Amino acid sequence: MRLFIFFLALSLFLAGCFHDKGQPPPSDSGVTIVQPSDGKDDTDRTIIIIKNDTRGPIDRDGKDDDDDGLLPPPAISKVTPGYTSTPEERFAIYFINVGKDELQGDAILIKKGDFDMLVDAGNVRSTNKVVDFLKSKAVDDLEVLVSTHADNEHYGGIPAVLDEFGVEEFWWPGKLYGDSEYDTLVKRINKDGIVIKEVKRGDKFDFNGLTFEMLNPSATKSFGDRDNDAVVIKISQNEFCTLLTSDILGGVQNEIANLDGGNKIRCDILQAPGHGLGRATSQIDVFLLKVSPKDVIFSGSINDPAQDSKGTRFTIFEKLKIRNARSYENYKNGTVRIISDGSTYAIDHITN
Figure (cartoon, rainbow, N blue to C red):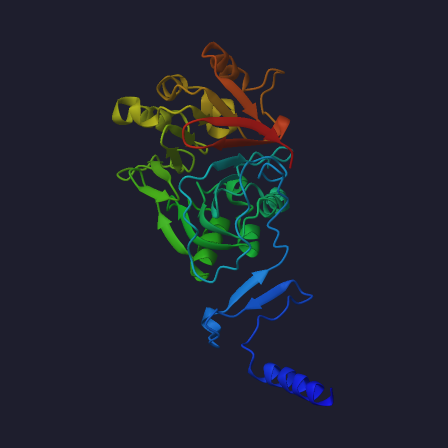
């Protein structure tokens, strides 16, 4: 019996010395380090498994908690420019409610996977709202930041956005119109090493299956005022199309309406120019005819400078009723959200 016990102990000792490397047990931190199966000590080939990896509140149907149908991007810290290409994924466009008292304003987020573009950032009083909204949508950085023109109701929130998010490209119309604050902003962006693009009509950019075509400002002439020289963007994918119109007035509306015989701007969704106020919509008839929208987004503030109770937006609302086009006002009902797969789309309001 003693001899048997001796050999049993010896066998266990030798097994402990010559056994192949096993995988370490999971740590309390939830991170397990797994070596390659060949047992080589190669740190470049080490696999790290994160237990209970959560990427935002996901419902059982795979959608996030505000039902965008858009999953937050992977929680990976980016050290190089770029985004994960997901051209078949659904995308969202948010017309963020940034109007404040007498101040109008635009801030529009285009999100597809981890590609994020922000068009304008509202007025200076709405900076926290814009930053908080971007964070709520799991924006980690901006592939593109667009400033449509030198109007502080549109660019006032950009400095705060730059403070909170990395930006890869900055698009702008290339004109300051004597605005010293805008000049300071552009100089800061240049100093930060962000790629600056002066966009003009005819420029076209593709990102993650979306096409962004510049319809304004003109590449050959200037209207001489900041509103008519503002950046206008046509966003499209397959059958989907929408126009972001900033503050353009009647002169440039008619010019854009005649591009390619009017076929260039025919879209189901239109952002009402100039927040839908009378100054920007008094001569909109030809433009409306050529765009022929089914849905029109009004962004800005409920404040209307009209002296009568109807307000200066009354006229365009009547024109849209005649055309059986639907209206969405973010200053009344909350941020407007568009979800699309490139062929169909849905529009609703969300609170923010």
